[in-house]
Length: 382
Ligand SMILES: *Cc1c(COP(=O)(O)O)cnc(C)c1O
Image (cartoon, rainbow, N blue to C red; front, side):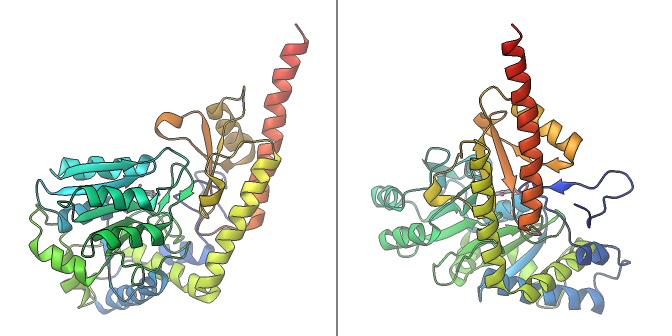
């Protein structure tokens, strides 16, 4: 990474975590803009451009709200705006973030039923349909599009079809935080009523903004839902957005950054952005396998935005990650939940090229050689 300066306080990094992701120069320049009045015309113009750009990237005609919050705040807004206390919800979980959504909704007093699938596998649409068929009280399904903890992309279109075949008026809410903007998703065609995304994933923007696409069905549900809500009340956001504003003071600087990020995405073209992610993901999987690592995710559902592999036998993942960072400036992520210390995760979303991954793979090759060399040396010297 020669073209991305670190701040004076740290060395440049090849940041390959699945969020936060690196910032292109244009985005960093936008972040250097001075503040404006968040009730003034400069901000309104930036927010309107972002709203248009988000609808374009989400490929939707639904409203897309911009919340000042992490992705989890966007997910909390789904619970607060679509559910009522005690209401039964089917959460389809294939990993850490699916489970986390279940905990979030439970904290609000929803009655959570989980359809969980083994880590590394995708959800089976037939199982989702069967669960709905068995329980007519379920009117809401929540599903993760891309499970960042396992590197699996769910067959969202098929899950959506299967769910709606059984329950035509089901509310389908999607965690698209590590997919939207990087992976094709068609919320309108697939009838995904709510889709959540987060600025620090594929958007090339720092953490701090959540985007929520809301369908007509979700708005009707919102009018009846009785969960407590205030800051995240979608209706107040929609009313403010119509005037080019937000209900409370937003992260103004991040909206400027988002405008710059969306301009870069528009210049590249959405199909090209998707294709780049797919191509870089293939390159990453081949590269890790070529280094002798065992890939974690079911290859049929391997994610275009994050690649997972088991830590090699006899190699401590934490030591490997530290060596990569300290010696090479390459930052990968480790495993989550039960796979902490046992997995490597390579993020390749947002501002990423094959060269970025090639550099990360070369650093990994050198460090594995170092660590394996150490093992062999110890063994042969005894
Ligand atoms: C990153 C991520 C989240 C959490 O987002 P935060 O911005 O950390 O709150 C949730 N779900 C998925 C799929 C993610 O990748």
